[in-house]
Length: 303
Length: 303
Image (cartoon, rainbow over all chains, first blue to last red):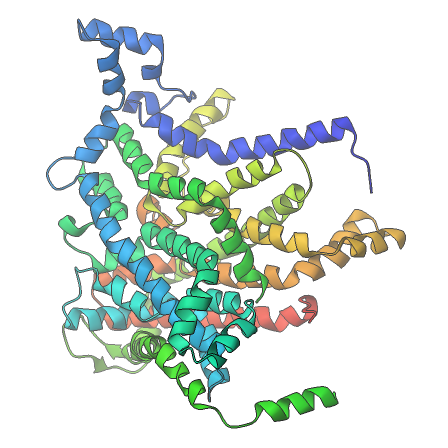
């Protein structure tokens, strides 16, 4: 093994940090821009907002006589507050609530249906298994674009357009084969002896799944849940197609609405809204990093 | 040999009653597959041969939609071009970058886990509207990127206004999110036995040879999986073009996903849009088949 020299090591660190800074800069800039005015956002090379400096504080003090530092601190976040409370129906509090009403049941239904189906594939030997598994893998590659038009026509007939049903029902019917596949792979890695001995003891198949396999599957379910959360939450195309009324808009559609809705866009406010929009993902990521990384690493690995 | 034959004989006994329970567990997926995947899949093929405005009855018109697409729709040709360039830039760009970074991070150094975490963050935002809005502002004529270019003495580049740059700038947004492939590569690089590198080194292979003859063959299944999934995704790209440029300037970013959306859900020409979706599907099929075809030359599965 080669021994690394000190210079070599320093250079590695330098490179790692440089790449990291380039990658993270846009996000940091987005956060900082939420405290800026349009004039500050455009034509400036700087990162830190004026409002954070003592010059900003003094300017505000001069304008608002008798203002305290506490009030200034509150004022700093006015772009966030305005986005959150919004005007009329267009508040991010509503968009958020809608996003969660759409995403959480979708995630739960996906997990339940995918677990059942994965159990069927991983632990039973039934006629036609090869064919059905082939179909499952085939649908992994079926592009959403091909099925969306007939689905739309169908949902329109059933009165599901402008509701969240186009998201809930496919989730309940395990129509996202990726998660079924992911859980099958995971279940195959669990020792068969466990459920076979339970079966010999007279345990029903459902009880075997719930009481023996499920506890072992928690990490995989967690990963699958996180990914489904992330994808559904970020999704724009399907929301745009299926949801029409602004009262049902999710965060993605809300962002689009604020972008198109105003003749003069207040970019600082727009960036504050974007920060609010990505916040749940960042919180989830830092809270459950391990599951993100393991989830990605295992899905592709065993295939 | 005899052993496997014996095993097969044991397996060939009739399916037990327990095995038929599998269909109970598969039921949600079977219904989902038939109603939400197979039926729409066939219907979109049928619609593609029809004149079908949403809300009317589809009328068969033969190959009319396809003939119009390729002969009389200049916009469609532009969308084919935009999607082609996008895919050819983004898929290799993302793969090469994520593999290079994964190899660079695949070492024991203090703080390396932190670097991995940070590099993954952009991938959290997937196709979200928030990062598209962010890119739009960063690369505006008077945005921060141009402010830097000006500060360094360069002329302002119209990233969104100039058809030569717009698509490339959108590609940069996708490539920025290379983190999830990086995590997959990192996991598979860890699985490559150290002894292989040692043996290669003893045989006098330099690091370039080691990369081509040890690393690539060892991680080829995961590289291949990534390539296919990313190609399918790239061919359907929608959010960034829709939010940032709306297909402009001069239709240079008018990707197929956007063309399909506009025909189907703005003009409600469902038949015409279905034809677009089938062209897209055929392209995906051809590309996937070609990738599979050539994969035998370089993908090695050791079982």
